[in-house]
Image 1 (spheres, one colour):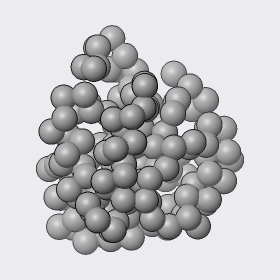
Image 2 (image 1 turned 90 degrees about the vertical axis):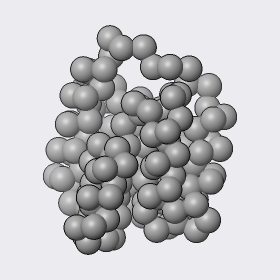
Image 3 (image 1 turned 30 degrees about the vertical axis):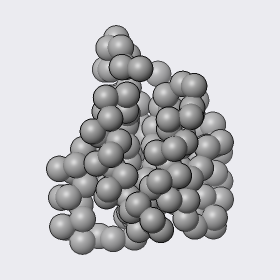
Image 4 (image 1 turned 180 degrees about the vertical axis):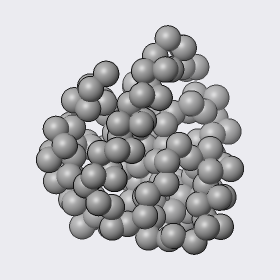
Length: 141
């Protein structure tokens, strides 16, 4: 699987400027930019339930209005339909407690904003490898 095969990405972030920066970064990396965005954890969960196909990746901010990213991550992991969906946290927090909390809740990656293009590329590559490993396993519907 290559970066261009990543598929649909859901970005959950309440900053339109950051979403625009991610779109730019994905284009620079040769990855299809995200088409699906949500600005809160509640909106993200609703979006995931409405999509007809599982996205390949969720990029999740922690500090969101309403249901925050930590709670949204726990909800995603507790739902059988999304339990193996790759989730990368993108946050301004470099607090070790936040990093540990997200890892314990099931985050596949944790990146601190602002994210360097090289770091984003490396994490996407790692997540693509994980998707390759999971490709023979059926995702529950």
